[in-house]
Length: 150
Length: 103
Image 1 (cartoon, chains in turn yellow, orange):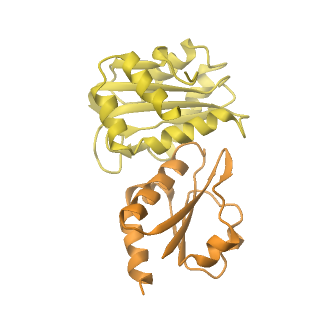
Image 2: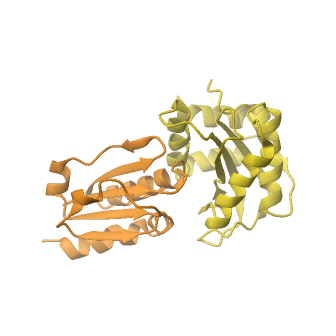
Image 3: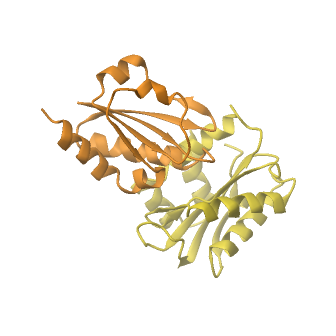
């Protein structure tokens, strides 16, 4: 099992009005899991990045991320949204699957970055997406994501 | 035909790799050889060699930041675009290069 994600970092019933609220709620999951030194610093990094260009990557997926001193240990939070949310994606599709990445500031050469790049590469895999949309519970979602790191 | 590419983005954790994956997929679908160097926060991976560069018809530079070692590509046709566009339009980009350089 890879420590970068676990069932505490997964939400299948997140309710939010907009993308900022989603990011805030998911960042809370990362904070509760003990990966952050500063929630505020981390959140600011994510929102600053998001405001540069949308992290909606099309196909109903977004991948907000922040690299910050406020992050103690790298993590990935995942949310599947009941109500799709506008993320200004280039294909104009609303987002249903959100991956929020937390990356420590000083992590060059860190093994965790490898994991995040592996995750990014898999986002465009249709089967991966379909499996995540269909997974019946958090445990299943966790094992689908763990599988790509295996 | 061989195409080479370099991808890079400001944070270097997500779009660099998404763009690489998109370009590789599009090239594969068309049966064209491609090698994509990623310049992310891990550093340079799958680095393009002199031989790669010599044998390529063109280099795609999909980056929102200045790439490292850009001087390697002196003298070969370049297609520069931002990294988001490479994810979005990878099919068209590869088509465009195939069209231009087919024998």
